[in-house]
Image (cartoon, rainbow, N blue to C red):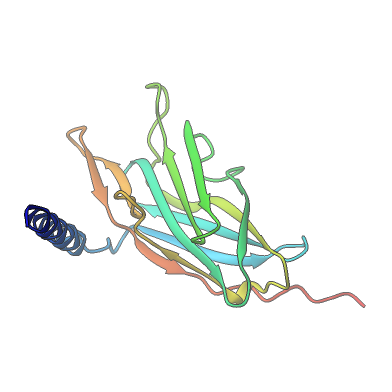
Length: 189
């Protein structure tokens, strides 16, 4: 009997906790109309490879960018190959991490501009931030690749950690936009 009561109490606690987390997720602020993260998927010359370009538009200085994405293909399992920050707006950031999960087809990018007190936050502006490279065992068309932001445990969501006028860190949820995939390059005969 005591074990049954403990199990029931445990289930009730988990249910209340899950409901609270669900309500918390639903209470997230609406996406900003001025700040965006947009992606395009392009075919690249490598065998069965695509490049996912990520562009950022921000109106406030941004200190950090958690970027969790689910990246899937219509008829293929994707494998994360690499990330390139070269020439991107976040190239100078001091912390750039990536945590790909092939099983769940997700990737979590963690970007922080300054760890030492010597780097500025990402200035307001627009442009390409970085590129992700993926491949598949079989044929892969850029048009069949789907990119979407996701919530990854414990609380990683697509957001801009902004620097407020009083020096505190705020949170802005950017609007997410998927650009049209470019057509595959014509084959030379």
